[in-house]
Image (cartoon, rainbow, N blue to C red; front, side, top):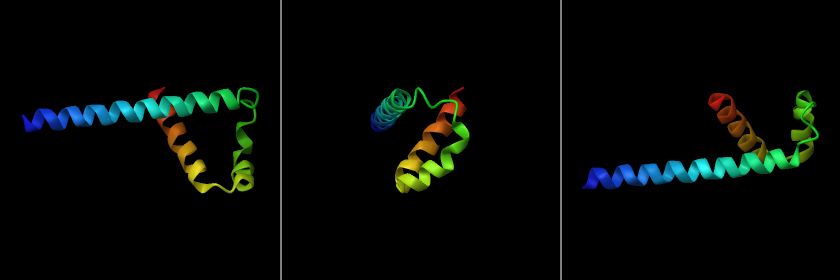
Length: 69
C-alpha cells in the first residue's frame, strides 16, 4: 500500500510540473510571437531585465522544449 501511495504522489507531482511548464510556454509564446526571428539577441535582454531567476526559468523551459522535440 505504501508503495502505491508513493507512486501516486510521484505521478501527481509530475502532472503538476508538466501543467505549469505548459502554461509558462503558452504565456511566453503569446508574448513573443513577433520576435521569433531575433533569437540571437537574448543576452542583451537578460541584462536589461536584471532578473536572474526569470532567465534561469526560461533556460530550463527551452531545454525541456528541445528535449521534447
